[in-house]
Length: 200
Image (cartoon, rainbow, N blue to C red; front, side, top):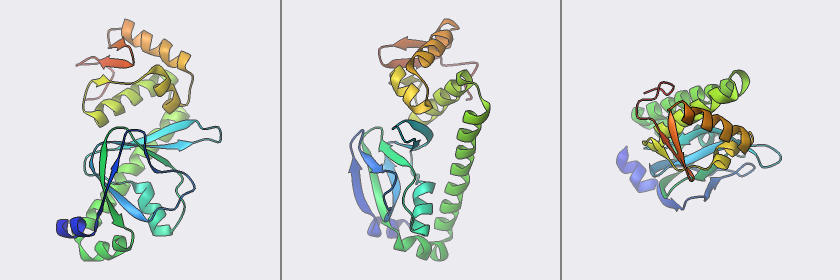
């Protein structure tokens, strides 16, 4: 299976800020992340974003799988957050490998299950959580995706991804800092090593 992936995959490199896919475009290959991190989000009509999930490790995007199989246009925006290396697998191999390699089928099914759960969390956050709870959930997701408690983000970056105002984010972050849960710096947030409000 690994030999097939390496043989058929086309290497692609993205710089920070480069797009892998955007709404309204067709996807002709399945991205398999080798290194780096990609942010998957939805856009509104005014250019605002709502974060859905991150791709990291040896992961692929459930949205791109769905679009490839149905020959539909993308409905999400995918942007590299750091130097990123991918293997782009031609869509023709998606079905072929599903019947040929049980490990590939299991990988695809696990990807769908994981991303579906993350989409439910994103929906629940918008529908049911207060903004302070959404911010905490966002920071927890960032810490997990980046593998560090030091996040290089501006208040505007966070506001953009949570679809709220910078003033609201700044006020809530200051409250968490006063509570000893994090330290704020210039475009940097240092989370407590043992925070009460973030999952391990």
